[in-house]
View (cartoon, rainbow, N blue to C red):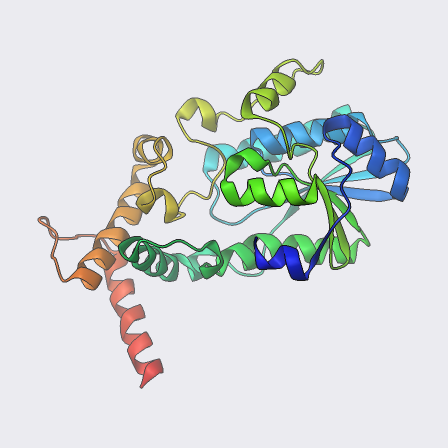
Length: 289
């Protein structure tokens, strides 16, 4: 069982999900405002619709989009559009775009270095990446605290991974962590249930075009995971629609594989990023000296 569940998470779940869980939370805690993290993906769209449809109009709903500065351009445009769409269709909805204090470029080289080491060592741990905290978690948490929001609804589903399955099963869709109550209306939903819910919604919300482009979802454009850990659809989609970003990621991947294995690539890595990578590595050596 993940340590965080044992030490900092308190389950409040009753086994409810979907609209029933939303209505239960609203009735039990009587919030004046709440938040829905909104990435533009199907899960976050379904969650936002369920919350908006089952929350009284006197409760303000903040749809919070944290712009990681590493967004797929098509998805970024769509997500901004959907913030306005919700405002136009739900009078108590307010779209918010947060820009982190740090930029993804500060983590780009470090992330590929870490990811290649994990790939070669055949181990994986997302918490090795600092960007997840600085570009996602911290901006959202700071906003919730500033606005005195204590309840937020996310699109996390247990089906997405074994760890999430254990977490969802243990918390049963709602838990308290620190100052916040985190609610997961889709915790026991399948992907097909999410798709059916969105496609059959009476307002017919538009879908994110990244799915038609071939991406698996709204993941960060230059996340090293897709370059190293086998996301089947997203990498070919990136190569097709954003070839410069693909070339940059592949150059970083090849550089660090060569560095850690001593095996030089068949074709010389010819990309401007390599000069910055070598400066980064020299700086690491100086810092350790």
